Image 1 (cartoon, helix red, strand yellow):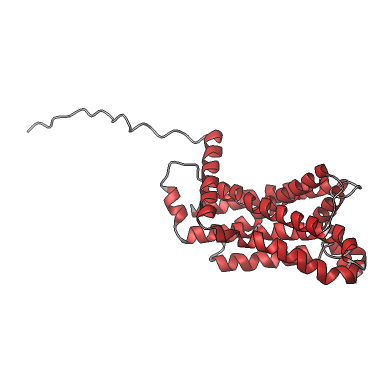
Image 2 (cartoon, helix red, strand yellow; image 1 turned 90 degrees about the vertical axis):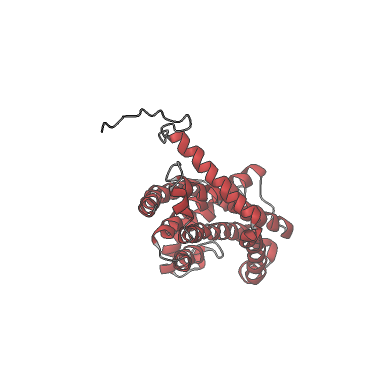
Length: 272
């Protein structure tokens, strides 16, 4: 018996997979970011923390501490609004790691693995989509401050302060994304995130002047990156300008991304 070799021709749709380039990686990441925005539209309750927390924190901290620290509420607003702004937006960035861990536990990223997309796209897309949360939290905090009588010096400085806070929050989200890919559960990610945030936000000059703190605590507050961001925001929204604190804040954000972005990507690649 002689075996006949039957020639086969590839189907028109069976083209070779295209290589993943930098451009396609960016496109895939933006597509994943759009997916994240669609999730928010379908379940808007995800935004309850960035809609309620800025209003609640602004009212609570201002009226609780304003009289004791500054003597009256109007005098305290230039101090507390930038502090609340930084604290609220940075706290919002913890959601990145929690949601990332939940998606990985549900097997969402296992399904992404079968798609012809860049492996890093789901991770990068999630962090891009979360910038919407930072914009909402920033806007609501500033609006509440304006309603209560806070008057920044200029529109340009206020927009610069808002952009600085969003950039710093996005850089912080890489820390929580890293813990999101290495932790075993979403609850552990949340616990680790708050252990990091509490010292950074409350042991700073966000709510009280650093000069009123004990010497050992003042030493920590002076080198705390959050203190530099708060001081930069206060400078940008006042007539003094941000000065060197803006550079320190941006430098700190760049260092965080340079350290934790590769760690998060490496941890994600191992899981994906």
